[in-house]
Length: 205
Image (cartoon, rainbow, N blue to C red; front, side, top):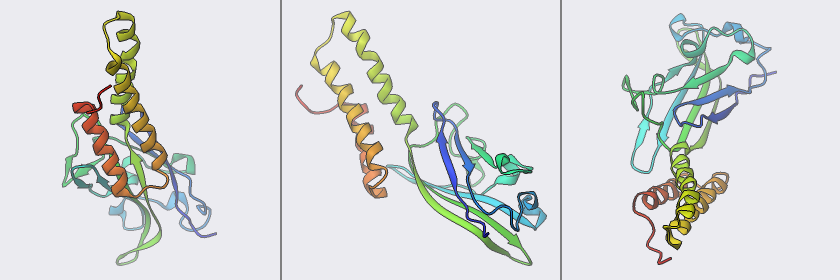
């Protein structure tokens, strides 16, 4: 069976870590998981390339040597890659600070196994895009969380209720659209929600 690469993706609640877990098929054939090594060994390598498309910029991250990040590997269950500010670099520098959150946006990911025989050649590769939006989701839920306190204080108007509901509805639209929308549409929707959270809506509640 030929190696067919795939992963699952989970974003941690604090928006500071993304975990990719290998769900590939075909590891029983060459290369075996135990054949994987650092790229400097010039044998079999396993890498990830990430380009982060945000509403304001495109960040091309340095290639990640997944063996250096998470190896050595013995079984497929070992192929779990936890990416945070220390592993997401651009030109050698972290794209965020240790206290910062990872950028919301559409992440284009290439997951690849290569073999070296004078030059690197692809054994298997997969490219996919994933919507990362933990930071803005946290902002929306923080606004919703304030509503009961405002209500109990009896010092509120309809806008205090309706604005967070609008943000939440917009967030749900982004989540539903992630399966069918184009990258540009998702980024535009993220930008709009960011603007709403910053400035509020113009609707006369």
